[in-house]
Image 1: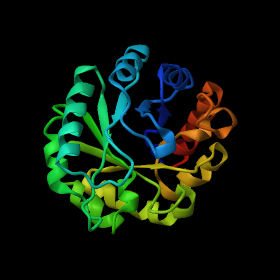
Image 2: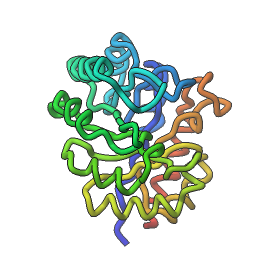
Image 3: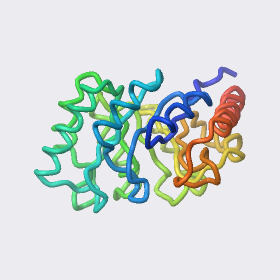
Image 4: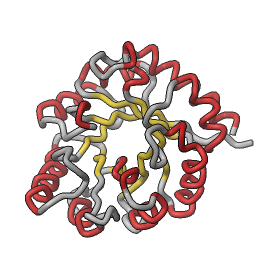
Length: 238
C-alpha cells in the first residue's frame, strides 16, 4: 500500500506557541487570537512576530467577529484589508469562511476576499460545520482554485463523532481537488483509529497538544511530537 502524506496543523496564539509547535514537528501553524470566541484575526504585530519566529507555513485566521459567519459590507472591507496585510507580513496563507443567512456558502463574499490572496494558500474553516449541507458547501467552494482544503468536524461537536461523515466528505473532496482536514475534539490516542477509518491524513490540533489540554496553557512540543508520530504511523498503514 502507498502511504499518504501526513500533515499536522497546530493552533498558535503567539510566537512561543508557534516555536513549540515547530519544535515538535508540526507542519503548519494556524494563527489566531481569542480562542474563547472560536478564534479571531490576530493583531498585525503578532502576525509579524510569529512569521519571523518559525520556518513552517503560517496560516492566519481572517475572522473579524464571532457573532456568526455572515458578514456585511464593513466586515468585507476589513477582511480584505486583513488579507492584504497578512500577505504583506509574510503569512503563507489564510483561514476563512463565510455563509449566507440561509447557511449556504457566501460565494460573492469569498470571491471578493480571495481576489486579495494573490498566491496565499487558503483553508475554508469550520463555517462548513454550521452550513446547511457539508457536501453542498464543499461542492460550492471547490469552484475556487485558491481554496486548498476545508477544516471540519464533520458537522458534529467533535471529529470523532463524525468519522463516517468525514470519510465520505474526504472521498468527495478528492474528486473535487479539495483536501479535508479534520479537527475538533481529537485526542492523540485516537489518531491511529481515526486515520485508518477515514483515510484523512491532515489533522488539526488545538487544546489536544497543550499543557493540561487547555487553551489557557501553552503548546507542549512533546505532545506535538507524539501526535505527529502517531499520524505518521497511521498514514503509513493506509
